[in-house]
Length: 146
Image (cartoon, rainbow, N blue to C red; front, side, top):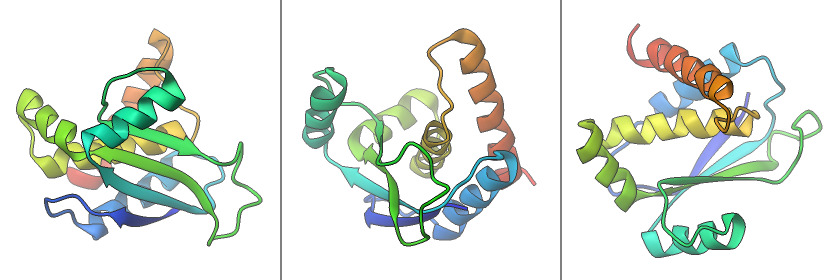
């Protein structure tokens, strides 16, 4: 199972136990090697825009970016950094107003979404989008609706 560390906390309160439960359920439902640490970092819009421009050639801020350092995780030790999830708090909070959810709900949703990307799920094609949405929903239900 991946481990996580929050490098830069959001301005709103999040529960590490919930994040841990998300990681456990991702491990439970996604049968792929998950070794190493995932850093979670909250940044301002200008910082995520710079990253988005540099690595995705999109000169706009976005809600979340994920960066991997390895193609697979089976050789990683538990203290190795495997991935980073970069969240833009300002856009995350804007999303909550559009989707009528709390800051925490949107934060946890983006963590689940990012973990699935880390494990090579994608949503470029419609069939892949459906598979990824099903996994996101399954994990969300397990964490929040049981």
